[in-house]
Length: 422
Ligand code: SAH
Ligand code: SF4
View 1 (cartoon, rainbow, N blue to C red):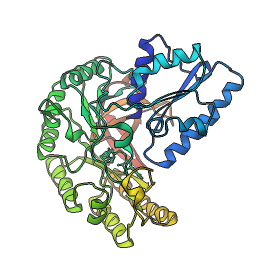
View 2: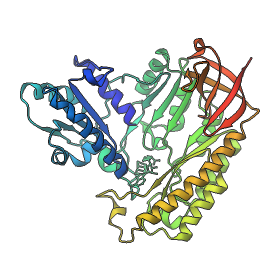
View 3: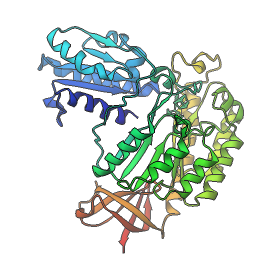
View 4: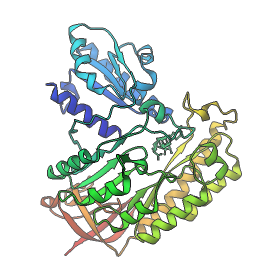
C-alpha cells in the first residue's frame, strides 16, 4: 500500500512541475513515506530520517518531509523527535504537497497538515508505476474493521471504494504500459462496494481487460471472503491461484479479543473451500504471536492450525502495542521474551513447511512471467509463477517481459529452479 501511495505522490508532484530524481544526492526535497503498523517500522524510519538529515550540513536548501501513517499518527510530534524535519503531511492531504513544499521554499518554517476527511480517494490521479513489470492499482482506501491491535483505521480513516469504471480504466492503462501482472489493493478488498458493484463483480470485470494477463489482490479478510469470490477466482482465467488471507491466530478467544469476526473453524473451512476450487492454490497468511493474554495453550492452537493448514508462506509478527488501539489498553500484556520465543517457534515451523511446499513443486511445469536477470548469475533469469513463487532458470534477457513455461527441477529456500520447456 505504501509503494502505491508513493507512486501516487510522485504523480501529484510531477503534475506540479517537480521532478523525481533517481539519485538521492541530486534531491532538493526528500520525502519519507512511513508505516505505523508496528513500532519496529517506526523505529527504522526514524533511523533513516536521522541518517539522511545529515545531508543538510552540506546542502542548506534541502527540505525533508514525512508522509504516510506515521505522519498521520504523530503529526507535529514528529518535529519534536527530530527538529530538522521540515514538513509532515497526513494520508488524506497529499494533494496539498505541491503547495506546502513551494511555500516552504519561499518562507521556511515547519509545516504540518494531517487533517482527516475520510473521503479522499485520489480519484482523478493516475500513479507513476515504479515496479518493473508488476503494478498496483488501489481500489479502496481506509478500513472500518478496528481489529483491536491495529492502528490502520485510525491513520487511514474510514473505508471508501473507488469508482469501478475508474479502476477498470486504470487497470487497462496499466496493462497498456506493459505491466501485465496487476495487484488490486485495499485493506479489506472483499468489502469493496461501489454503487452495488461488489468485489466478485469487480473481479469479473477486471478479468475481461485484454491488456493484462495476471490479476492478484490484497488483502482479503476471512469474515468477508464470500463463496462467490472463490468461485470467480476459480473461473477467471487471469485471476491468479494465490490468496493472502490473514489468520492472525488459531484460537477463538484470541480471535474474538482481536475483534476479527471469525473462528478458527471458519478460517479452516475457507482454506478447504479454496483448495477444493483451486487444487494448486498458494495460500499465504499473517500471524501475530504474543497478543495480550495469549496463554501457552492458546498459542499452541495457532501453532497447530498453521501446521495443519501448511501455508505456502506466512508473515509472522510479534505483537506490538499501538497507542490508541483497544488492545494497547488491555491489562494482560505478556512478556516481551515470551512474545519473541513464540514468534521464533512460528518462524521455525513455517520455514520447514515453506521448504516442503516448494519441494512439492519439483516436476511441475509452471508459467513464469520473466521479470529480470537473476541477482546471482547473469546467465539466469528470474520471474514469478501464477502462485507467486520466485523461479530462476537459464535464458536470454530478451525474454524479460514475456511469459515462458518452466519445468521445476529444484527448490532452494524460497526460490524454485527450473528449465524452460517449449
Ligand atoms: N488489512 C490487512 C492487514 C494490514 S496490517 C488485513 O487485515 O489482513 C498487516 C499485518 O500486520 C496484519 O495482518 C497483522 O498481522 C500485522 N499487525 C497489525 N497490527 C499489528 C500489531 N499491533 N502488532 C503486530 N502485528 C500487527
Ligand atoms: Fe487493520 Fe483489521 Fe483493518 Fe486489516 S482489517 S487494516 S488488520 S483493522
